Image (cartoon, rainbow, N blue to C red; front, side, top):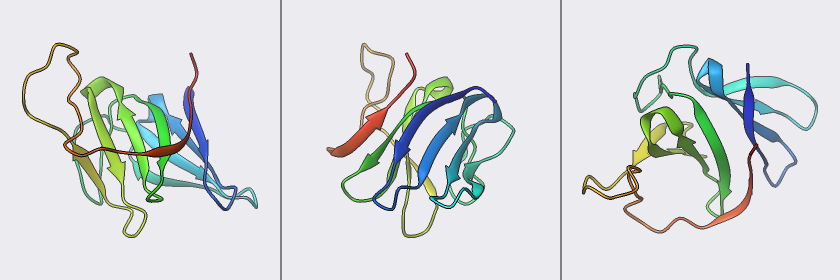
Length: 115
């Protein structure tokens, strides 16, 4: 429901930010579709039952984790490749962009988004 950002991993699996379902989907290289994070309800919840609020651009990190710009919440989220858990990467200091910035540097290999 309004796919926005897409990326591929090293195994040619496709990841899609499904904005209006507040979810991140994975389409395997064999065509199987699954939800790797999020629900159909918006929110700001980390962990196993993570909630997003209109996820937008996504990127595959050099660490094989998926990084998601959670547009409605104005935060950067990380989907951990080893556990599938979601965490929010933020610096609580105020900044002029109104987007919370990462505490650590994040290197990404591939990124694609709908403009």
